Image (cartoon, rainbow, N blue to C red; front, side, top):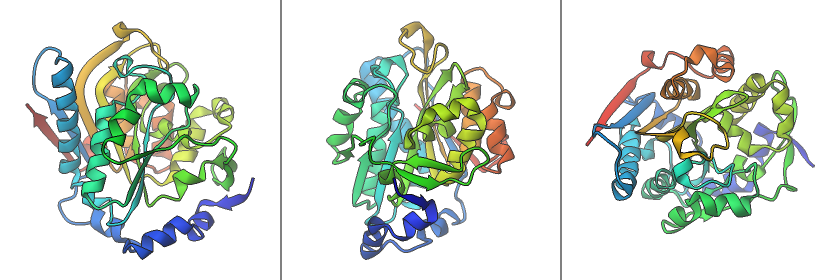
Length: 315
């Protein structure tokens, strides 16, 4: 394994150089994010009653995702022309979408389309699953959903990580998948679900899918998750709460543990989004270690209502 800091790796990345050739200027995404009127967080909620049928569920998933991104300021706020984008869903387990153990494929596919509409050159999809990716990917429905929009589905080579300088409280050097670092933008797209050890898994914990040697995290999961989140420097996260896994996470497997909530949140603050997600699980954010540690590390605010928050009703 080669050893790099994140800054050194990005500075020497051929992909970053290629992005400049396509007209993506350093700082352009940051400047766009600072335009007046930009929200820190947006929540789109279905205003209907009952449980939508399969066709309506798919249509609403698309609409909720579109409206959440629009309310945040639009995808062009984050994606420059010619950009290489990595979308990181949760595809950790061999479960069909209805079990809410993996991200809704229609949410992911909508983000792919929005990225291309905003001018992205390449959009890649990938995760480092717990189960074998050759089983988890097809079961999730994500490859089929995204490939029709032109996304590249990436099966990561677990032997091709790079030891990188995390400089965290617990993680000092750690093996990271370089493909996920050398993009211009990562969009983190987890699902809201219960977790037996961490109590909940959402935005911050989804970054565990960019590394190997995750057993180390279990020694101090809150601190390690905060370390890797700070290392990744999140620009945008989209939190899928169309279905929520209330119990027996993270693997799930029982329909009775799933609640259809028909909500999608998006934002620039992973701590705020995770706090909102915790409430979807009936939990208090200040009782979840990853959230409190994230706020302690300065990664965001637990009190998401204090941010520039936009809420959108979808009918």
